[in-house]
Image (cartoon, rainbow over all chains, first blue to last red; front, top):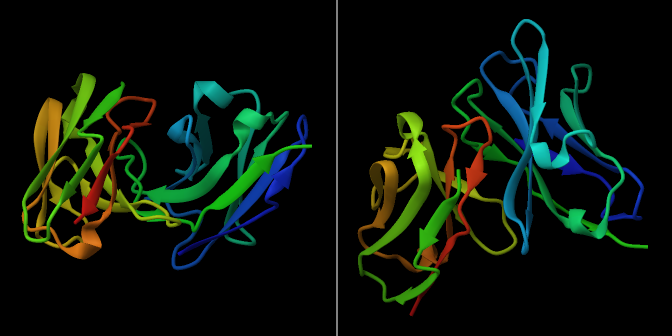
Length: 121
Length: 107
């Protein structure tokens, strides 16, 4: 189960910050990866990036947000976090954390409940 | 890889059979294609992965098939609870992408 939290309103140019607490699995599992996906009427469903543990931590991200995105795992809290810097109104969307088998098998079996984030002053 | 879904919207009666299409702009390697169901206000729910394998709690009236660039999701007998938007997703390339969705309405 994935439980998301974070603010629903972010000002332009600031940093969007969301957390996803994991239950029923370990964030350090070597057979799972942890992704962030967003959904908006204009962009549809868009995969943003992921982190996963395979003897060490790896991350990768979509070109569309590369340089602005940071995804981190906190093993002490069994959670993953998303930071998206320098947001604009185009970043307004419902953000989801999601998990899947990982490696090259990248469908999403479990999803968080979603967090609507509005970027507005 | 761009995924194009059709039809955009369809309205059918309970018990009818429906087939949704997902066409890829290039071949999806290893049939790495999934289907999701999304109801209003909820997260997408995985139905099918690997083009034709049902997820654990997917009813057997849902089936997927296809390879290369052409994939379909079929609901053999529509139930009222199948009213939703259905998305395909490919994971055969480095960048995972989703289709734009097909909305199924129940009359």
